[in-house]
Image (cartoon, rainbow, N blue to C red; front, side, top):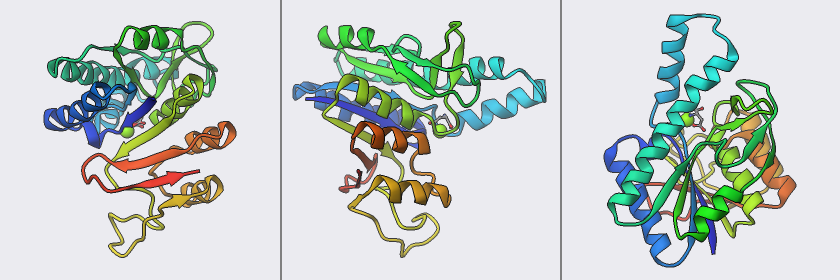
Length: 240
Ligand code: ASP
Ligand code: MG
């Protein structure tokens, strides 16, 4: 069983939440699953980084912005890997480039062109949990690119496709996909299952639970995405 799990920023907000994610990941690995974890930057890190950059140069180059923003996910990857290590399980962190995520050169909104997962497969074969920095890749010139806001979801789906994963789980701060934003509308109802096109139309109407490209990629590759709460233990929503 090969599982790709993605953890969003709120699911990794502080040391306690990182430890909780690491505990879940370690538990799965100890049961014999091969686990690839994709992480977002912690909490509002990406917003803070953007504010910092704008203070330095309002019209900084998109290439430098990507080099800077990608660090948020790399920090998460390092911390989650150390947390898994603290539970006594072997794990390794990889940047998008190390994980073989090749993109075009549209800095700030790059598209994944192909995934070369040999390094991930080598680490899995050595019995490690592999923790990949989401939201980033590398272009033809070897420069760091980012995939657009929320792009870690797309990293997870692309890796699930490239690795032929049995499951692709997206852990977030809501327990699934709702017909309206459950944080604003208490009577919103959760979908047990939702089709790709319905999901895409919810995103078009402002739902932020998944990156649009992740759903398009899942549809094109025939991958089901499980959207789950990192906190509640509730069943979540299957997209696809
Ligand atoms: N950290 C990036 C963002 O906030 C990417 C992601 O979370 O998926 O947009
Ligand atoms: Mg984020």
